[in-house]
Image (cartoon, rainbow, N blue to C red):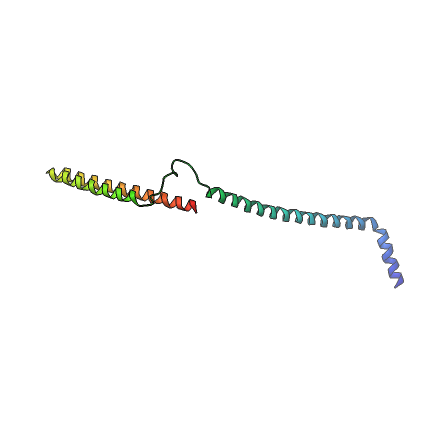
Length: 142
């Protein structure tokens, strides 16, 4: 047994410089890999925190009111505007129907009917636009 140990020691002494270089290289690679993992971990945590902070900031900015001319429309709390527009459309249809009955030609009747239909359609569009704006303003307030 002792001869075996002596032979191993001689081989170790013979290849000592190469063995030391291999050990140092392995140690450096291990340290580099460890530091690389630490840097990646810190970058991931920092990136996640940055995204979280940015999303909170964007939500806070979206919750703030905008004072542009288009978003400054007051909502109709009592429903007064809707009643006024309904009264106006009814009075316009009555006036146009009286005008249409006084005119005898079928061309003028069909033209007035088309005008009434187009006015009703435009009134419905304006009502839906105001309702959409009201819902947008309510959602912005929340």
